[in-house]
Length: 183
Ligand code: IDP
Ligand code: MG
Figure 1 (cartoon, rainbow, N blue to C red):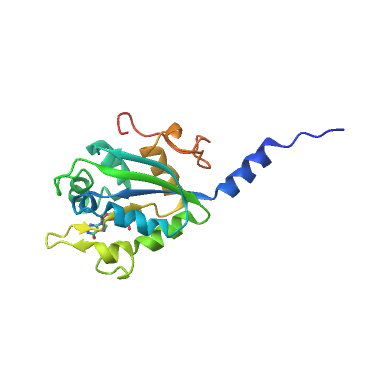
Figure 2 (spheres, rainbow, N blue to C red):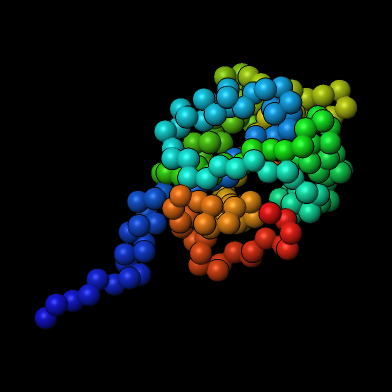
């Protein structure tokens, strides 16, 4: 008797082959300083697939939702102004989704530590970032820090049809959709 291949197995096989996906944002400090090409060249070293790319005018609602977990931090108001471009006189960021095995750790490794002063000099943040005297971390890019965050953030910044291929778990309904009007 002919057996049909289980669709759950097929989905899990495809998810494994696709590996992880991660969100990268080129932040306003990097846009202002013309670092986009440098950052993308460094990210190319990870040999991942870029499956989403867009230019985004960041609303306050989107910035606050993106950094939702940091609402209680004293630097939260400045962080939101930073992501919205208000501190650097720019009106957009660039957003990317990279996919492949170990994508999240690979991009975090290339990005370097959060504080550019503590980041490896050879990392993107170590090479191009700085801490301002006003306490703003101009750390060039955002990169998702774990799988749960990556899935949440990709869903916040991209619609499924804006990605070249499906991101595992994104369409399962396991994550909340972005609030109305944030993307
Ligand atoms: P990450 O960007 O390396 O994941 P998080 O701890 O998630 O670091 O913080 C998000 C962002 O908040 C940082 O990229 C940086 O812009 C800002 N930030 C984090 N800690 C500080 C701080 O102590 N002072 C000022 N800004 C901070
Ligand atoms: Mg983070």
